[in-house]
Length: 93
Image 1 (tube, rainbow, N blue to C red):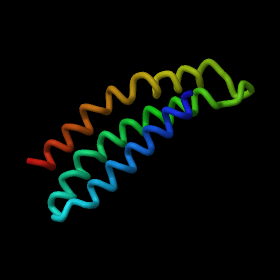
Image 2 (image 1 turned 30 degrees about the horizontal axis):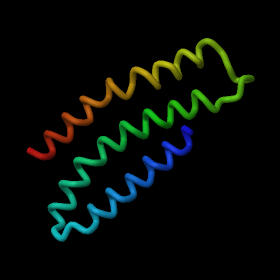
Image 3 (image 1 turned 90 degrees about the horizontal axis):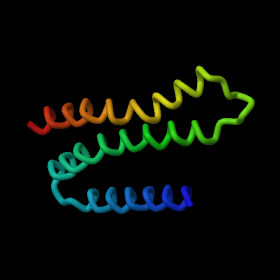
């Protein structure tokens, strides 16, 4: 089920990028990419840490590693999200 959701998200992003590449002006493409890329970075950070946390072998399990993965998975995306979007807003201004 999770793999199906992941494929759906990837296909959605492919469709979004195809639509952005069809924008006729270079300035319009740049603006669309600058709005989409920060969101993609946050989603990638969230998904990649979740995949590492779920797919790591039990032999590598340690309390410190589990804590670090939990922090990366649950704290980093929400904490980095405002920073990334504030950088994007400065670029758009």
